[in-house]
Length: 214
Image 1 (cartoon, rainbow, N blue to C red):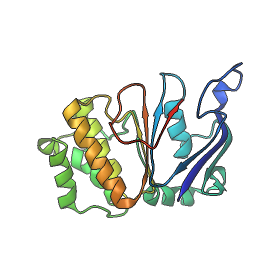
Image 2: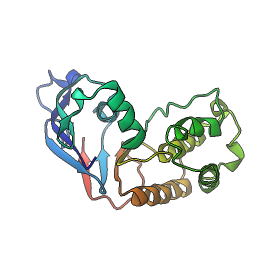
Image 3: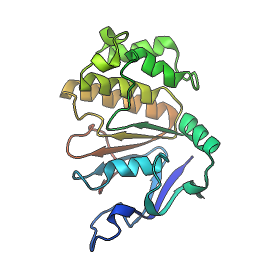
């Protein structure tokens, strides 16, 4: 996948609003593979909804979302499975961690779909992000910031053309935010992938190609 295009896309919940000032909604926007984008938003402007639309989790929007030249509404279940395994990765704001599984089990559950990372590489990521002692801890016992780092590692454990990160450092200190940014850029660079980050204020300090106001 080389491009994601939004054409007059708008959450159905916003359809009756008299005026919408946005650089994303009701616009013609193209995200290109290999570039870095920041989407700044106030709470309640549909930032998380945008991620869910593009990831195919929700369909309650107007307009068109295309992957390359194809409308995503036309994808079958099997096609979505393949896209989520090989083309799109996402770090949801709410993380979607399985609390009863250990931190490592949460990662392996994803990694086993493609065997993209070796176990040694995954352990190295735990060490780099500062939670090597949490590998075998149940995720539900971790702090939100620690869970956020587990979800981040999980998002890197697959091939992708684009990676979405919805408020990825909201509960991280500056030191860990810098580490996450470096790991993200290393993996995205290795894959030639596009990076799309959403934020309501705090975001990874990357060299963004474009910044949009939602």
